[in-house]
Image (cartoon, rainbow, N blue to C red):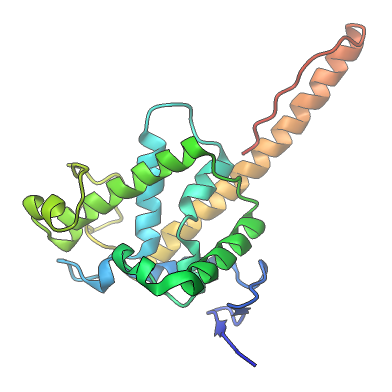
Amino acid sequence: MTRAWIMFQSGSKIDLLNPRSDAWTDRDLAVGLSRTNRWGGHSAWDYPLSVAQHSLAVLAIREAMPGRPLTAGEALRELLHDAPEALMGGLDIITPLKPILGDAFRALDTRLQAAVNRRYDLPPWTVASHREHKQADHQAAANEALHVVGWRRPALRKTLGIEIEPMAHDPLGLPDAVAPWEPWPPYVAADRFLDKLKALQKARVRGAKGWVTRVRLGQQANDRAGGGNEEIVADTG
């Protein structure tokens, strides 16, 4: 029988071939992403860039884009877009290699993402929201290539095929004694990722409770007015 088990820091275990959505803790996920490296683990700094820090950057870039603010659920979807990489053992495959790995790897990633979606009740992508997500993700990659890894500007387009102009300023708030664009130590990245994850989960609960209150108040007002039809639109994320 094929076995593909991973044990997390908490002692929880996940079967990669049949992943359960309760197989990890939030901290397991944060720690895993903080120890999963972007860009093959290479950087021009003392530390490699973690997927945890990258995920926070993508969320910050997406939140700064024009348009309506993200709901808490949409922000969670951005933050957790690379979550399967932590669950499969800290594996961030560089993009050009993914097609070479074929359907089996794609199926594994899909199974793990489905488990993440169930665990955090993530809203499905729409065509528009996925396009905006990819724009933020590509912007983060352009920033990282120049400011973190050390690629020169002419090589971004010629060698890496990156068309987006890197940002001049780091979109993330900086921990103490850390320079702009500098990769964070894993424990800092884990703590910051976990803080954001918890904050968004709490915001989502507050939003849901607020919607229930608004519905009840609307129903009461509607009853007092004689029971006419009133449309109530909910967007709890």
